[in-house]
Length: 338
Image 1 (tube, one colour):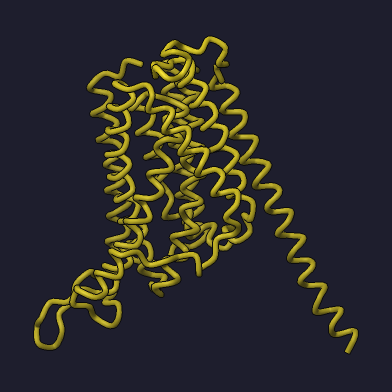
Image 2: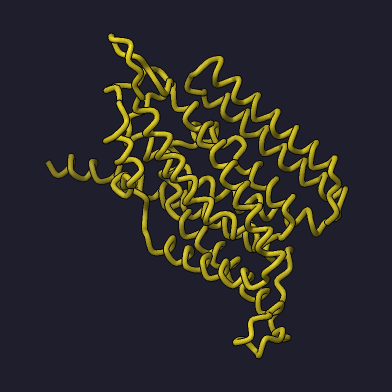
């Protein structure tokens, strides 16, 4: 895939302008977005991703467009899973709803920076060492097993890491939030940090952990740095508005972890087969390529990803509806018995 320098420049400028525009909106008027506002913005960002995929289709062909869409859907699904943890963090630290937009936007910027660094490192490693695919595949399969067996996410699952505990102990901290500011002065004019800095540390470290999962996953679908980068950016765009749009729906996506486990496990197996096909490790098949290793095309990958996520979403909503009906029936039985 030959991406000219001017295309990279135009892409970075365009995506940066969109991000700055989003930041300007939050800075100008911190508020809790309405359902209508969130729906419009999420629709716009999803539409932009679809249009970009069509641009890739026109410029480089259907194969690369399929890789972009597969990577974007996978990263978008992982970002939704990331929202579960964001909900827990913001609830745990009791961040006022009107200031959560700024926290989310900063968290998204941090995620972009971290993923950008991992993309650069991953691309350089893959170009020099094909056996890196073995490491990625094992890591993804391990993550898939962990996701499938961890059960539902609960607020008690969040544990403050060492960095958060250190910041609480060392940094001079105010007892309450000062709007969305990170610092504030006391009555003597001394500068203190606000609890918002601890929230951002928690969000940032969470972003780091999720970046470790997401980057190997998308490199399993495409090795093109341009597609890896743009798929990640488009997956994170609108995540702030999506948080307010489906905040209540997150609790109903009970099978999301299982669906993501299937997707990551599939990509892990796909990576392992590709590593065998390009094998150069001397202790595997004498350092020769494994000829029988099948190649999983992007068409099959895209079908598995879309099908798995669709089934997961429908099954989750059906189960949530049944559980809600069962809970509504229980009080009726109790009242009739009395």
